[in-house]
Length: 227
Image (cartoon, rainbow, N blue to C red; front, side, top):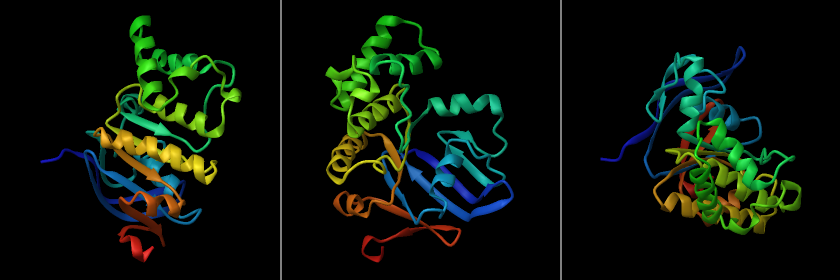
């Protein structure tokens, strides 16, 4: 039986005192690829932030990669996030250092100390996203698509059990979006679980997977033709 990576039972998502999403019941198994869709402001990002404990879970029961989200102590949040890979729409690369040093910064911050192992890991993740020869470049020297590939490489550094991609193609043109999506597909095919928030319906039609929709403060699974 496949391992459960995300399990939410009667979960409500709040921002401050505002109820954003209610009555979420969801199970995501190891190796699944799940889209989260919905209009701007429908709660996609709030839902993703709840999964990586940026928004505390106050109502319902939830677990992500074996961490209980309700009542999660603040000191445990970094340990949860080490088991996650998070990819943002705006890349979030450090502009003052090259790509290799961007990735080395993350490894050092998460407890790596062996320089040889760090260099080997960086080479490995950059190769996975087709950026092996670009490690010496600075973020501003790369295209948007290349920067997002690096951001995906960064998300793989600690061999995450779950990758959360929040609008990873939101700032990219259609062709580049497809290239980035191919990288995510390959990562998923290697057995990693991915949850991706998106409003890019062309990608969903091109690469169909289980799709959840945020609408009217609810999340529900949709069949593609009904979107």
